[in-house]
Image 1 (cartoon, rainbow, N blue to C red):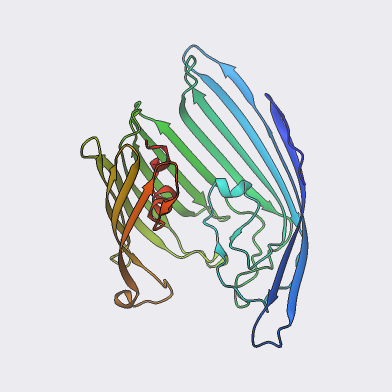
Image 2 (spheres, rainbow, N blue to C red):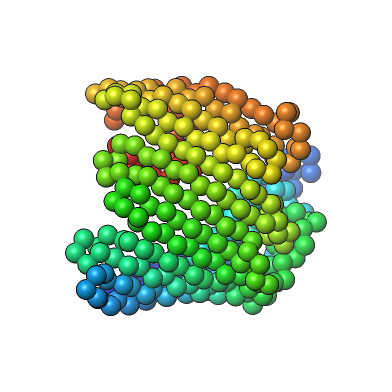
Length: 321
C-alpha cells in the first residue's frame, strides 16, 4: 500500500508492504518453511530551479528511508538470487538483491542530490550530475550464503553519475563509486551515438570494478561495443561485444541481421557467451547458439529472447524505430 503525493515543487511517497517467502522442498519430508516480513519505505524529493540567460538549472535533493526486520534465512536455498550492482540508482531501489530467495533486512537512509542544466527554450537536458550515499543504522545480517560475512559498514560510500549531451547526436556518461575509506571501487565511462532519426546507434565503453568482499563484488576490467546499422530500407545489422581484460575472454558476443517488411519481421542472431561463472575453465563454459525470430506485426510470434538481451544491455536500443 502506498500513497503518492506529488506537486511541481516535489513530493513524498510512503509505502507499507508485506512479503512472504515459502518453500516446500522434496526430500525434506515435504515440510513447508515460510517467512513473513513487513517493509516500510518513505521516499521524498524537492525541486528547486533558477534561470539564467543560457540555461535553466535545477537542484533536486532526494531522501529514502527503508525499514525491514531481520529474519534468519541461512537454512533456506538460493536458486536464482544475486547481489545487485551498486550504483547511484541503487540508492533509491527498494531491494539490494535480485531474485526471490532472500528477504533483506534494512534500517537505512539514502540521501542524494541531482542537478540538471536544461536548454531554456527546448528544456533539453544538457548536463546531469548526481551524488549520493546510504547511511546504515544497523548491520546487514541477511546474506546470499551462510558463509558470507555480515556487512558492518555504517555507510555505502559515495555514488556519483555525470551525463552530458555533447551534440544533438552524441552523449557521454560517467559513473563512479567510492568506498567508505575513500578508495574508488567502481568506475565507468561510456560514449553514445543516437541520432534523432532513431534508426541507428553506436556505443563504446569501459568498466572498472575493484573486488569488495563485503558486497560479494568481484574485480572487473571490461570493454563493450554495440551498434545498430541500417543496410537499406528493410535490412539492418546489429552487434554486441563485451571483452574481459582481466581474464582475456569474451563474456558476450552477438551479431545479427534483422529484416522488416510492411506486416512481418524476421531476425537471425549468432551468440557466443559464458555460462557458470564459478567455473574457472573458460573452455568448458563457452556456449554458442543461433537464434531465429519471426513475428507478424500486431500479433505474437516466435521469440528467442535476444531482443530482451539487447534492450537490457544496449543503450538506446528500446528507442529505435
